[in-house]
Image (cartoon, rainbow, N blue to C red; front, top):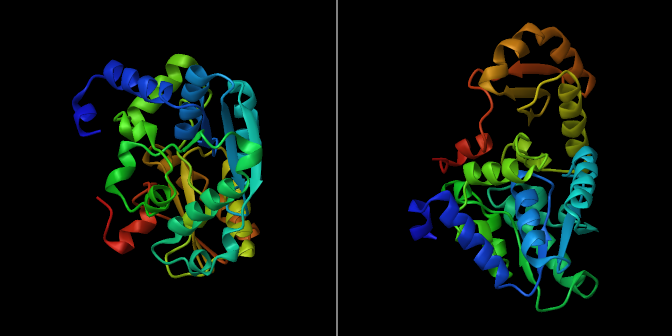
Length: 277
């Protein structure tokens, strides 16, 4: 992977396709986000019908994202399987310590292993859409992937977010300019216990903000307080509509609403861990 970081885009793409051609088949952990959609398309291009997209369905995934994942899988032409997962049954996940993502990914990969017989042959690799941009942040889910032998072809080929979006635009994927997304639990500060009711509140709050037209944002949950992060380019718009935003978030159950002056940034909750670069 290190050598690919200094390669051209064309060289990285060729390395990715060669890597995928070496697989007998692929079970793709598929959220419907930018990275996993791009990986699914590449797998489908190289492997044809020897690909299945698997989406974990739990309270941490908004219904809108699940619907979009199903539509995307159809548009790519891949078989799509939705697997209910039960990460909320795992004490380590509910506790929401710094390793929450480890327990989430572990639940997914254990569920995939349990359902393997209906997903594909044992010789098919399980792959997921980690990219090089993920390597410098706090990503305990990568440890779970390594423990279960799950492959990260995009990382191996040196693909970062810029490469993923370029590929997506060139092949016409609707996710090419889709805002980044992470599971709803990422909106909750580490140390605050997670349950289905809390996740439902965050989902309602973010759905309300989306209906008002903002594109890249997060509603961070701090008890009675909703801390709204929006992209710097949308900050003025958010401030102009602050009254309706506040009313919408109070309608989702929050007593107080704040607008974060630093704006949206990926992995904001990791700042309290001192691990963000």
